[in-house]
Amino acid sequence: MTMTFRTLTIVAAALALAACSAFKPADKAGDGKPPATATDEVPGTRGDVPTVRLITAQTPAVRAYRKTGARQIYKAYPQRIYKGKIPPLVYAVVVVETDIDAEGNVKNVTFSRVPSHAPEVPGKIAELIKAASPLPSPGRLGGHTYVDTWLWDKSGNFQLDSLTLGQRSR
Image 1 (tube, one colour):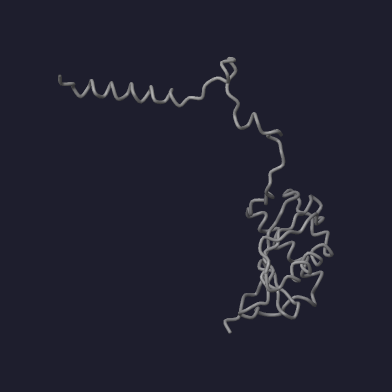
Image 2 (cartoon, helix red, strand yellow):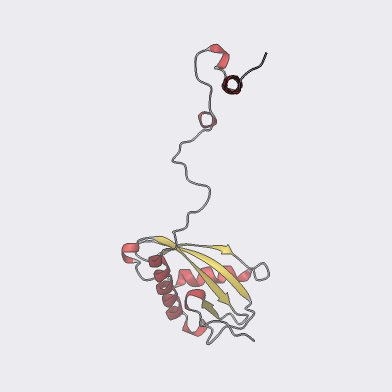
């Protein structure tokens, strides 16, 4: 008995559909209720607070405010700003996330990169930022989180990446 290609294709499709229903979950004990899903079993709602911090997208407006905030910090600590180009190897590079409200008040300072060899530096940076608060009002931008990189010299002087004069080659 020879089957045609068309007949074989139809039989294969029928078997594939039958296999799909074989893996479909059955009703619980035949009570007619649909099976529970993972979301049915997990307490809480969809409005739960996310487990990660959300950082404001670094749009051109946020990047421009970053320079405004850096200028305020430079103005608050003129004696601490490293003059000229930073040495090729700085003591610490710290990536700082600063949360501000619509008036420019610093609400929180966190770090996405901290130096393991200089654990004292992030705390000092947080103190400097909080003491310089309020930063200029962000205007229509409103409250947000902006990210800047602090280049910290062993002397305790620093430059911010948004306003740095660059790095010496030697």
